[in-house]
Amino acid sequence: MSAPLTETELSEHFAHCIQVLGGTTAASRRLGIDERAIRRFVTGEKPISPRLMQDTATALRTLVEEASAAEARITSALGA
Image 1 (cartoon, rainbow, N blue to C red):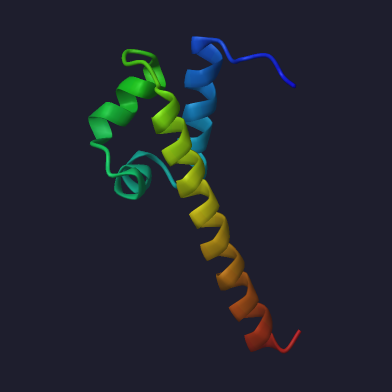
Image 2 (tube, rainbow, N blue to C red):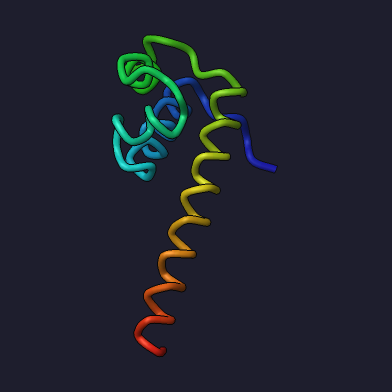
């Protein structure tokens, strides 16, 4: 089991997740959170709750599913 993240590490990891989700605007839409709030979480101005991290994980899983479906359709269309 890994050690819990520090507040700084959590903010940095959250920032990475926001980039994976497509940036602040796309993440805002996926998470249903105002863009300004997301920026405040990233900078550490606002604390990141376990619920926000759970919602972020769910959004990332959804993105993976959507990307996998898109890849499968491309592969199918190319006959590979």
